[in-house]
Image (tube, rainbow, N blue to C red; front, top):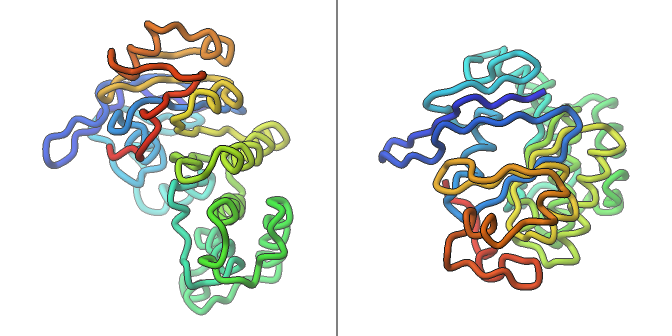
Length: 266
């Protein structure tokens, strides 16, 4: 179980990206975080896996405060938290296989990883991950030869190499068209349901949220302004929508319309 308690993040320039945020995530949840660009979605995810350090608060995962971990303890815990990025974060000139194998860096001595000396077991695990994402036939291609949807599947396969108990997905479909967006989220849903893997995912489009989330939180100006279940989000009122997206926001066909443009910068 993940418990976020009074989490606050203030950047060096004085920006308060998160302000006293508290919520909990049960094991096996598919939690979606919604909100405008700049609402704090990316900051929240990056605090959870300590890509950035929170200013105040607790991040309790299975009773351990991730906010207080340092050194080897932090590295060992991060192994169990996969991360998927909006812009894929692949080494473009490297092969798909090498990108996937990089997911084992937390388990591999640094001198071996520099030389690309991964074990036969790790290489088999990489093939299995690629097969699970239906992209095994692309293994020897350079990452930049693949389409956006294929690159994101490589990103998921790389995360699987960590043998994660939880995956954080930061706007994983923001740069994809609607058909590919559903495809990527279906892969995450499969991991959630078949592996009982906890997924925390930030999204813009409400139709995707309504389709895949088991729980939802809405952020505005770094504060939680909405919490609900899948049933709640499907019955969201105009008032609740405007509380998240502002008085000028207009719902169009169950989507955020123009509000979906751009990534979260805080």
